[in-house]
Amino acid sequence: MPMAAAELERLIRAAFPDARIEIEDLAGDGDHYRVVVESEAFRGRSRIQQHRMVYEALGPHMGDTLHALALVTRVPENAPTDEAGR
Amino acid sequence: MSEKDIFARIREQITSDDVVLYMKGTPVFPQCGFSAGVVQVLSALGVKFTAFNVLEDMELRQALKEFSNWPTFPQLYVKGELVGGFDIVREMYETGELQQLLREKGIAFSEAA
Image 1 (cartoon, each protein chain N blue to C red):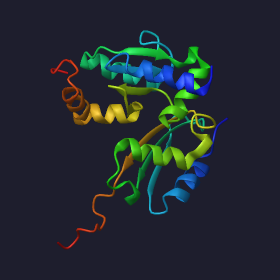
Image 2 (cartoon, rainbow over the protein chains, first blue to last red):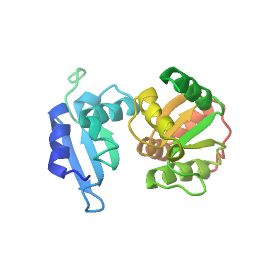
Image 3 (cartoon, one colour):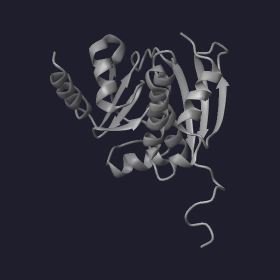
Image 4 (cartoon, rainbow over the protein chains, first blue to last red):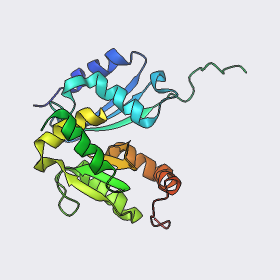
């Protein structure tokens, strides 16, 4: 069962309020998406942890309503950090 | 088979070879683009690996998701540790981190790749 891009974005936004989210419907079928999530929440986390965080936000949809999700997670590059100004 | 038994079986499988891939289909006939992608990366690197087809074993497929806390396939394991799915494997290959990991773990691959 496909999933609307808006719903996908809503679920990600709920877990990562600060995120910059890009969603691309690769096959135009609501079932194969490429998603880029850029959030401060990923800072200091390994890639595998970052992807797990997104999968957790999508909950049971992942691998079910969402068949294929190409996922890219990033930490914002120019965002202020604890070390800013040092 | 109880949950404990199947987790023991998974632990046995992921340590049965240095590089273990749980995928949809087989290396010769992958049945999912993401699984095919990981096979392609491993082949390009000339890494020897053992593959398990999760489409042939629904119980294993379900148990693996819980075992690894990872909801999708493929899942690539190196020395018994989950590296990730295709997106992570591809990114690590492109940045050279995958080659670095293999080197650190003492796993033979083609450096020219």
